[in-house]
Image (cartoon, rainbow, N blue to C red; front, side):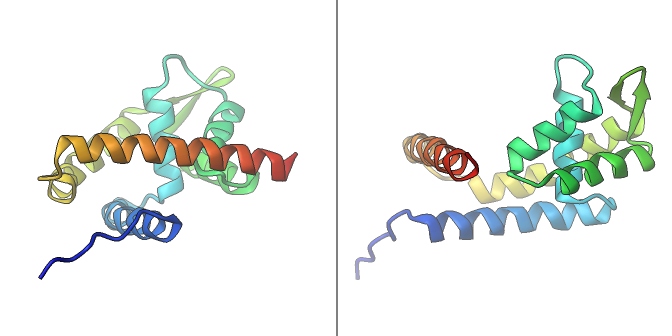
Length: 147
């Protein structure tokens, strides 16, 4: 019996996103951090230079298409949890913040390997091209709606 793979569409993209996000959120919950907070922390840790609170909020908003209040609450929670600290006008990750991100990365690595493992490189490349195009088009549509 031959089965046909479902065509990629918005529903399939959403199902894959929420399944993978659910795995990550399960790990994050053990560390008392939300998905949005993790996005803000990762942005601070991986930034080439220290970011201001407004820059971190803007990064979260752009990355997740989140509202101002949600993004600001995530940055504020990281400060309150001493995962980010003030350094003049900037916020920098603390040792605890860097450690938390490293721990989450280490815990999710084997899970990610099992989820993505065995998918042929050419399939991943094709999916990457399609997803990049979908994101570009959706960003353009969102900008027009918010225009």
